[in-house]
Image 1 (cartoon, one colour):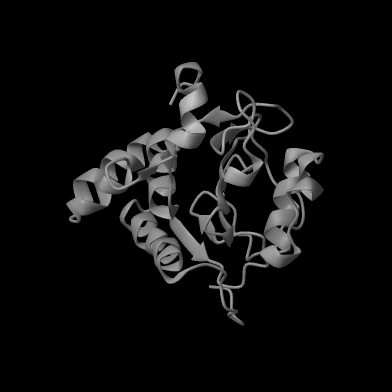
Image 2: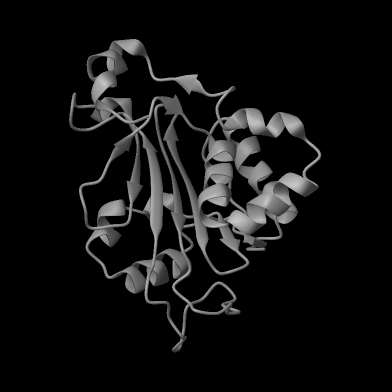
Length: 208
């Protein structure tokens, strides 16, 4: 675990959910490390948007722009600005085998042919009707994909989504091992909906 812990940004409930991700990852046997010194105050998404994937991964890892490293070296970001401006991001491992990085990307490693970034943004202030949903997913990088959804996700719902979509075998293992049935309510039942004042105009034009 990264030392020199600084105060994380977010409400008490939000931070509790970020920390609860650790338990979920452990049950799924995907946990490797938690970085409690994530330096998002120095992080700008625009800095990595134009980078090649491997260079973006290296910058995120080396400059501590992440909260969790998974067993396969994938990274999770939980970036909080305010209750109405936050993002969750999954950055897949670029390596074709598990690597012992020790929080630093140095040297040459065997790389995968395909990489994946999944990011969820909740930013009502950036909403533009028919164009920029206030809650949406990005898939990959260097494209204009914004898949709008009606639900306002939280850190727990985001990791359950990643488990199910990116780690199906571990997801099934998690279901078999998990004893807390209430956690599944974070998938849908306990999530708030986007206000109809915002969503109503385009609800028939959005897959959600």
